[in-house]
Image 1: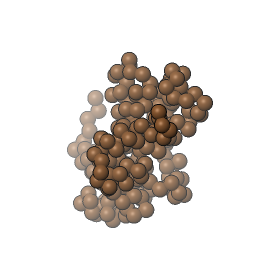
Image 2 (image 1 turned 90 degrees about the horizontal axis):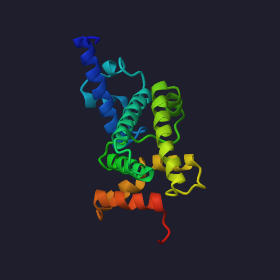
Image 3 (image 1 turned 90 degrees about the vertical axis):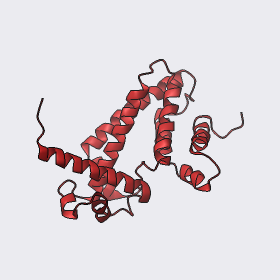
Image 4 (image 1 turned 60 degrees about the horizontal axis):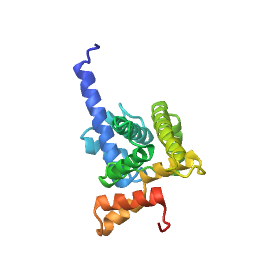
Length: 202
């Protein structure tokens, strides 16, 4: 076992604190409104110290997204302990978890259109590896649910995948929460219903 020096432990703890602060700020303000100065202030370090860990705002966002993808993969690991559960139930559980994370204010919010950020993410190997792993694992459940007749087999699996990803950043969650009429659990139940069964009358 490799022994980690005290200095390395301190640097790792500081990096984790930075990523945690970035995640909170991205969830609260979004990428465009977040500044590097705010991240440094949130962690309680000098901006110059922050730049020793991350060289740009885009790199900060990528680190937060990697951390979120790792949380999602850990959630899939936990769900797979119940191997007997149908694939559709596993997918619903994933969607439920992403919405819980968003309602708790822990889901980083990134703009759909930002060339610098997109370039940084597409060049970030760890981010791409985690995203690919998550997509492949969800894809297995999607195709299994289609074969079982629980999801429309005529829909391309990637469309179902993107629909699930969209739940993680669905603005409807925040709008319903702000309205104050429904509990978080009721909001999640309603969105799960529309996501998996649509808007048609049954």
